[in-house]
Length: 250
Ligand code: PGA
Image (cartoon, helix red, strand yellow):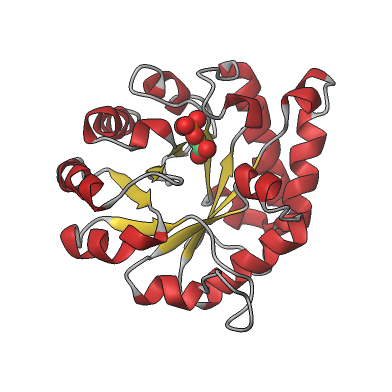
């Protein structure tokens, strides 16, 4: 446990114009002051370059990349394009993209590998729907998703997993600590079976309605190595308390 530094990543989704960049300076300052935590902000692609210039010490990420290096894919961005403007990581396989853009596990695997090949770190998302949770199928669903979307050469120095139950995203609802511990433990065991001892170095984030009020409890759950934060990452006054909670949780 002790070898995994806590990692708090914000996901701005489709929020933020240039005027929102003022939030980034105090977030970067907090991240620097609280040196025991890794902090990243995954931004709309239009803000990546300006954010990277405004906060060179903060890890700036994208929220997706294309699986191909280049080609006839109108409107898409390659991993190298994102890296060139200052991103050091990207999210892949967020449930909103799996739903809205119909991304399959195979797409997610290919995107993760493309990002890695372009020198980016990757946060790979998984998570069950409410119907799957209610049917007692959450563990089976998530482990199947991970088995099918796990990139070749998975290693802790570039890959992070984010467990995000779909019904907890943006709803204010979070699973019980026991349910989160069970899921993260199952993911860890699955990783051990596929990548051996490396699995104990790889971070598994929890995502879904994390905020300053519940972060300390969520981050204390066994095998929770950080958080992927949507709504509460949009402003410094909501995001910094989560970074502070992570710094206090060893
Ligand atoms: P939320 O989103 O924190 O707003 O629930 C989390 C996510 O989708 O990454």
